[in-house]
Length: 369
Image (cartoon, rainbow, N blue to C red):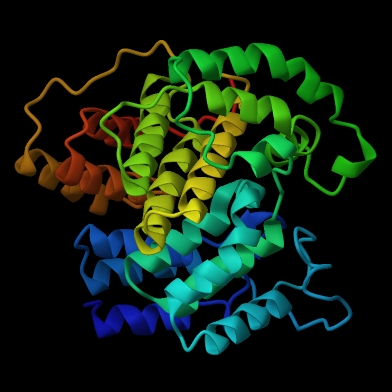
């Protein structure tokens, strides 16, 4: 049961009172940061300190613009309040049942999660993790607002293509970088891409728009362990791959590879609700394709790092890390990454979790070499 004071905070900082973005394309992380700190057992006073630190960045909500249809607004990155209102209506039509909402709208959204650096999915997953439906609606609306579809025959014919290959995933990632990087940059000035800022967002859009068949071919070649039986197991495996890539990256604390971890964690929250079904499989394939395009868009950092935590990792180790984290005023991404890693270490025992947490605490963010 989510604490009432947390619900009140999430209501206060939802899209009813603050816009989903600030300073142009930067995503509003207030909800994620509050929930991550809550999951790290920060008290209300510490969370209020974070809120005070973060609030000055935020914008008031925009006015609703009825000039466009909801389909016009898909991926258009305008009139976000109208999109939120639409999804609130879907929620009411589904009798306030979030599973029914996901089953109705997620098929049209899950192929385009790469927009806004995957923050629509991240927002959705954090909200689902504490059962705060208004914030989940905001996340769905943000996914619609930022949608960059991965549309191709290969995906439509075989949405469960991830898991049908027999090759090493890290080798696949590096080969994809070798084969698609030049093609990707050849389209940077394409007229269709000018609505995206000239950074990773544009590179993701290029790969999804012009080379979706090639991207899906690489996804389909990845081998998945034979003991994976359920969609949730598969989602966790995809998340584990994102964690391994982040830890092995020679570019320490790559800002966007970090987003692969938090978005993968968010995906598990969606799949947990949807269960074993084609929609879950499609969502996981779309996530894996997005993870690979982010890696290539970040110019495929070498996966050569051998960093590991030498200490005995146990509950006490994590408590010390958490104390260190909460004692410092840090970027909210560090709180989120540590919260996810702590949770995954307890639930899954993955050895990369403490290493990832230590990397995030010890290194400033890297955006490029």
